Length: 399
Image 1 (cartoon, rainbow, N blue to C red):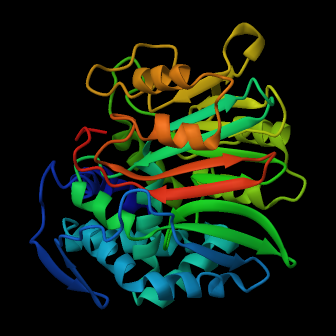
Image 2 (cartoon, rainbow, N blue to C red):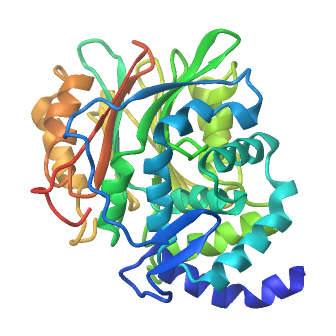
């Protein structure tokens, strides 16, 4: 069976690319009924106003993994099913079935906690385990974001923030995701372990904080190499490898596991995230509790390519990371970095705070754009964590 999967993989990948970017091609009829979900193209406008705080849920890590997300999924069931419906609307049934076989063969190799939690999500939504895995891996490869870590001159405190942009070439997906974006508090032994912002049904963490220890955001690394091929093509190949081997590991699963560890701190987070082998290229922005504890790690799949640190003594009191290597010019079609840096400089190191970052940086076009789903601000030392839905139809349309 494995040799058959290997032989069909190039065709499978081409069809997956077309499926996850509907603007590229539509290879399937617009309607397909499968596993109790109506997989058809749907318009799903967000019902939340811009700036509305995300709904907060509690996930208890003492519960059996398969039961942890039941309350979350019950509250978000219809919206989550609508999102899955949209994602699968262009996926041909033949490819869908082949991917299900691939996932079935890989199920035993997945980490127990992730496998059981995704099985629980599948139970709650009445979809297949394979559908939930596909959605989780899809979210791994497509976050276009702006991450910021800064140091206050007044207090020396580190402030970490991000805009999550999602839905390149899929604007209806951005609208749908606004309805399932949530803040989650993960509890362990009766105490708050860490906080995260995610989407209902997604078990990894791309935005999270362990108070008193570290905060972290993950951004896709785009258009790299001698021939700048869009990272989604490379990532699809790498994520198929996740299902076929144990050598590649989803970044957001590794972040989740790191946040759960009681002995994690800034230094250990940086060391671990810099050393582990991952399924995809990624930028990992990490903040800590003390002056100087701010860094952006540029990651290849198997190696750490660059470590970019805050150095307030040399005037570098903030770092802005989007989706391109910080040491090269930004592409003219997507330069969110320069406007973000200009906005932060206007705020100044003396006035920087979660409130000023949100109001004067994260809310500035094109840092805020039509694909921005949520904004998060966090401070490990102060223990503050806040996320808000974003919906700006008048902002820049492209990232």
